[in-house]
Amino acid sequence: MSKPINILRYSALLIPLMLLLLAAFQAPSRLEPAMIDGEFTRWADPDWTHPLGTDGDGYDMWSEVGTAAMNTTKLFSLPIVLFIVLGITLGVALGNSKGTLVQLTNSVFNILNSFPLLMLILLVIIMIDGFFDTVTGFQKSNYTLIFFSVVASTKLGTDIRGRIESLRNEDFVESAEAIGLSWWVITFKHILFYYCSNSIISHTMNFINQLLFLEVTLSYLKLTGSVSFMTFGELFKKCFSYFNVFWSFDRWQALVPSIIIMYLIALFTVSAKKVSQHVFN
Image (cartoon, rainbow, N blue to C red; front, side, top):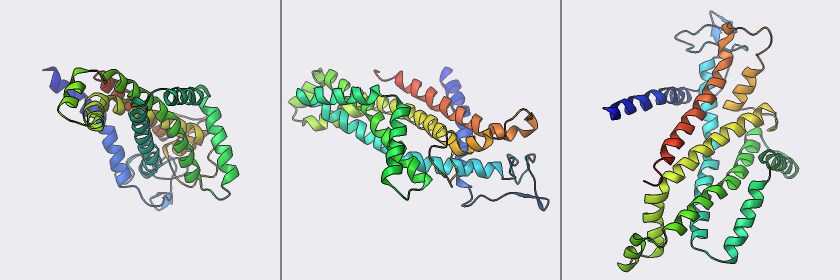
């Protein structure tokens, strides 16, 4: 009886995510102030045309959320792919290496992970400003998140390397070698797929959470320069500027980006925790 209840519970958690995807699918190519009764209206109440009403500048909140979801997905796609590919590559390569190479990479990983993240990000932003004269806000954010994905992939690589080393002398590995399977087939098919897939998914979900935190922080601190595209970080920064001592709940639309970001972080955190509980199963 508990299984249907769990299915219903997780289905309910995914409903807001489905709405975000719907908003992204319907997002306009260009944001323009919403016309209500022939005029621009700020903080308008929701209706069938504007499901979330309008913000303090008269823009349709639903369209802004959809555009932010679409642009954030584009911004995160390449860093996530690099994180997975580099993490698996490093883990497999180091799991099949010994001696000086492993010691050297351990030292490099420890040095990279010992520096404060904000210091590394600031250094990358300074380098981007120095080496690239004409760089858009999207490119600047993308380069920064790509660098972060390279650094973060070392933790995934270390985890995979440890699992490969711990499973190398297991009975199923010796049996696979006895029937003639190559070590690469054993590593990718049997070890990575059956023993590391949950760990890879869990690390990736936690990495997406870190990307959300980082993108919102960079946008709020205005470290990505002049940004002409809407992301969750930019939407949060825009709506946060509406809060002051005169703010009241009749301007509840200003809370929308904060609620969305907290929901996404909670969703990926809970999912990563559930997946990590089955890592050794």
